[in-house]
Image 1 (cartoon, helix red, strand yellow):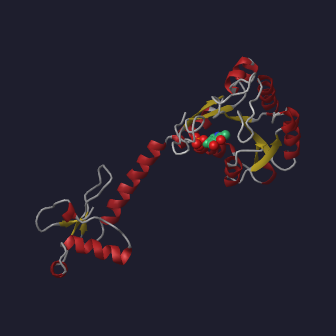
Image 2 (cartoon, protein in one colour; image 1 turned 30 degrees about the vertical axis):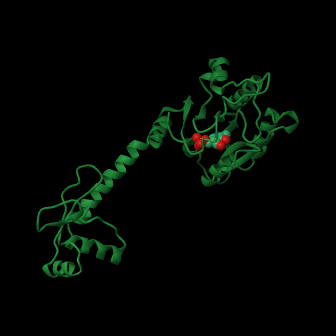
Image 3 (cartoon, helix red, strand yellow; image 1 turned 120 degrees about the vertical axis):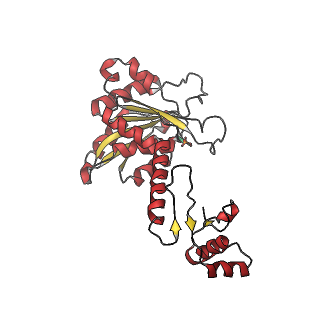
Length: 281
Ligand SMILES: Cc1ncc(COP(=O)(O)O)c(C=O)c1O
C-alpha cells in the first residue's frame, strides 16, 4: 500500500496511531542510536519518544530485556503503543537474528504493541552467517496465535540500498492485522491522487464563485483542466492608455494587477481571442 517515500508513509502511520494527552499520550519506542527522522517524526506529532538502547557489545543487537526496561519506565509517564525496529540498522548496520525477531514479536504480542518494521536495507546483508528475515515472514511462521493478532507495518523503499538514491524517493508499506476502520482511514491518507484532484476541484469552484460577482468580470464554470479564462471589460480610456504605452489592453490590465496586488495572471492576447474582447488566464 502506498507509493510515497517511506518517511511520508511512516509519518502517516504514526499519525493514525498517536493520541491522548498527558500520561495517556502515545509513546513510540525507537532504537538508540536511531535514524534521526524517527525522533523528528515523533516530535512533530507531539508523541512521546521512548528510547531503547541497542547493545554495542553484542554487535548492536536488540535485547528484549532492554525493551522491557524501556517499556516499564515509559509506562510511568505515557502510553507506549508503538515499537519501531530498523533492520538492518541505520546507523548501526546490524542484522537482527531470527531468534531476536521472534522474541520481539512475542514481546509485542504480550504487551499489545503495534510493530513498525523498517526493512529498507533488506538487500544489504554482508556478514557471513547473517541473513535477512522479514518481520512478516517470521510472524506468520510463529503461527496463528501471533499472526492473527499482532499488528505490523513493514516498510521497504526504492530510494535506498544500492546507491545514494536520495533524489528518487519512493517506497511502500504492507500492513497486517490493522483494524478495518483504521485501514480505511489510512487508504484515504495515502491516496495522493484523489486528494490532489479534489483540492483542484475545490479551487476551480472557488475561482468561479469569486469571479462571478465581480463587476466587469465574466467567468464561465471551470469544467476541467487547470485553468479559467475570465473575460474582462476594459474601459475605453484604459484601452487608450494601454495603447499609448505600447501594450495590448489586457496586458496592461495584467501588469497593473501584478503591481497593485502581486497577483500574476497571463493576458488573453497571448492565447488569441476575438477582436475587441479581453481575458486573462
Ligand atoms: C532506516 C531508513 N528508513 C527510511 C529511510 C528513508 O526512506 P525514503 O527515502 O523512502 O523516505 C532511510 C533513509 O536514509 C533510512 O535510513
